[in-house]
Image (cartoon, rainbow, N blue to C red):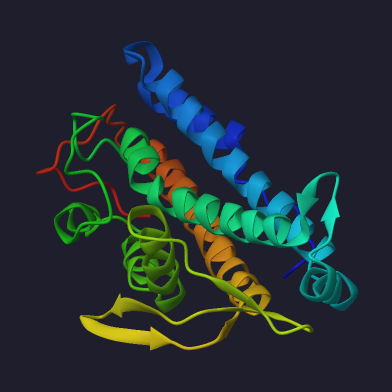
Length: 239
């Protein structure tokens, strides 16, 4: 996993929304700021959990876990690497899942900010069809690593913990399935750190790049006709 602290640059996004709304802010700025702060925290939590996972999953630690069931500070090594692996996955999943909510506050394609229809649904994504970032948004929604992440985390949250196997030198998830492009796929003995690294290094840069596209589109729109809030049937100014 890339050793880098990622940022979505909250101040830039909020400033653009303030410029768009002017005196018409009815609480959107505060809600946007809270949503973006939560996103940044999720990013930070991912970095933390991965660093802790690495600390407690080196070969020495894994052998201490298998041979001695060793505890550190009263907490077993197994609990430490399992908790941090799933802490990482849950926060990355939540980070991605919260994108439609924050994006809608920023672009206002759905005037009811708390509407249940806001999410990674085809109907909601299609509302952005005329926006400059539509292609990147759609690509992220069908990314296979996103599908793997959803499959694993949803099973963990709603059904059972997927056991992590310690083979003395590495950690592997027991088999799990996920849906991708309408097909049920199966992962067998997936290396834990490899999966976390691939999901992070694929999805996080795409996520941040998408926000960069969103900002560019808003800047372009503000240079044209200023519209405080789009409605679903209004086509925005293209970047």
